[in-house]
Every structure is written in structure tokens, then in C-alpha cells.
Amino acid sequence: MLDFEEMRRIYRLEKSTSRLVEVPDDFFAQLNVLVEEERKKYFDSLKDLNASRARDFGNLKKLVDEWFVVREKKLLNSALVSAQLEETDTAHMAAEEKKVFSSLYDVLRAHRRLTKSVLDANGGFVSMVSPPLEIKKEKMEENEKEAVQDGSTEPLTHSTQPLADFWPVRILSEIPSFVGTDLKEYGPYKTGQVVDLPSKIAQLFVSRKLGEKVA
Image (cartoon, rainbow, N blue to C red; front, side, top):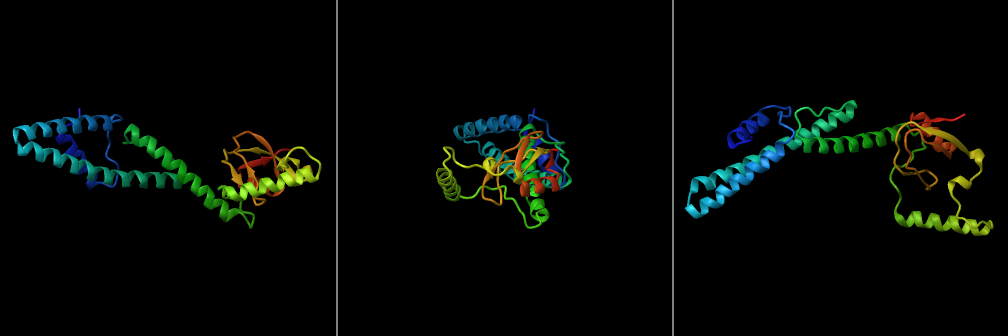
């Protein structure tokens, strides 16, 4: 079980190396027990007027705060490196840290895909971020007006456009919802799903290896 001296040892190691110091999966649970024990001793010291115990608790809080800042920076750097290499490494992390690392990795990988899409777009960039709600609402109203004028009872969607302008595409990588250059929203799409997409967007998907054209 984690005690004050072991926490000091971990803190000193963490400060002296660029790598994460190995901790057990339940490290934060153990740390919580240690802090609560020292907190109880601190409150007891107030009754006994024991200044030494009071200082111990203050020192522990400071040590844990400083350790956490150092550890957090290493965790962020590890996620950044893993996203660049497209390889995950959760060695030496506690269970809670592995969850944080996984979330960071996913966010950074999505950001790198966004950067790549800008570089590979050839003037046809497709934003993965939805436009403001007001723009989306205006486009929906425009579609509804077009539907009324055409005598249709349903608002127009991308699936009602001429089929010649669409390609059937099999999705090769999970894709979040996005807004195309036509300001219409598409997705989200799952791996293996076959969807009809405007030819321009379909070509982008194929060129980025996010999808393949279905014959």
C-alpha cells in the first residue's frame, strides 16, 4: 500500500526522468487512501496541537500537486508522440491515466486527419465541423421552399439530386458528421457502410483512402 515515503520516492523519480514512472493500475485509489489518512492525522493534530503532523499533511499536498503537474505534462507529450507515430503506448500508466490518454490520442488523431485533409484537398476541402445553426436552418428552409415549388411533399435532401452526380462509396474508416462544400451535412459513417455521395466528396474520400468506389 502506498505510504508517504513511497510517494516521495515516486515524486523524486518523476522529476528526474523524462519518462513516466511506473505506477500500478490502482495508484490513484491508493493515493486517495493515503491523503485521507494524512488528512485525518492533520485534524487530530489540531486537537492535540501537534505542529509536526500538521506540517506533514501540508507537505504531502504540495508534493502531490507538483507530482501531478509533472505527470500531466508527460501524459500529454506521450499522447502527442503516439498520435504522430500512430502507435499507442500506455506502459507505466494508472487505469485512470489510460482512459485520459485514450481520449487525448483520439482527439489528436482526429486533428491530424483534419490537417491532412487540408493539405490533400486540392481546392475541395470538406469541413468536419458543422456550420453555425443559423446557416444550417437557412439551408433547410431553402430546401423546403424548393420542394414546395417542385410539388414535392418532402424537403429536398442530397439523395434527391440526380443519381448521375453521385457515387456509391464503401466507407473504409469511421467518419464523423461533416459539412460538404455544398453546405449540406453528411454522415456520420461507419466502416463498411455503403453510401451514395456527391461525386466531388466521393472523389475526396477515395483519394484520402477513407472510402472506395463501389462498381
